[in-house]
Amino acid sequence: MSELLYKEETFKIIGLSMEVHRELGKGHDEIIYKDALEVECQRSNLPYTRETIHEIEYKGVVLPHFYHSDFIMFDKILFEGKACERLCGAHIKQVVNYLAASRLKLGLLVNFGEDSLPWKRVIRSEAIPIEEIDLRNNPCQSVKSA
Image (cartoon, rainbow, N blue to C red; front, side, top):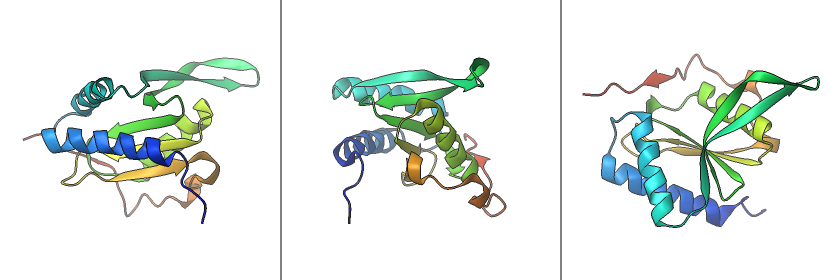
């Protein structure tokens, strides 16, 4: 069995995400969790950039629209945070697209909107083909604040 890609770094990021979730619980807007995660990154001296722009090139032309990933951590892990009822295929597709645009190998998809903190590792070379994602039984739903 091969070693997980960026195992120690992933463990650190998930630990910080769990701390944010433990403190805030579920029900906040996405941006609140991302702000709190940024505080945790700063306090733990975890290297990151926030709202990184990823340009898309088409036949030698950089397109006017682009992707914004939530965080790039350790200069090699793309982090995408959600605050929804549950993760769905469209969220995975988003991370796959961001990985392709950024040329990074690993993406972490984390959902702060559930009772526990579900997360998924998405590896660019082994990413789920988009046509295999079944959205009928896994619709994206936003969390409604109380």
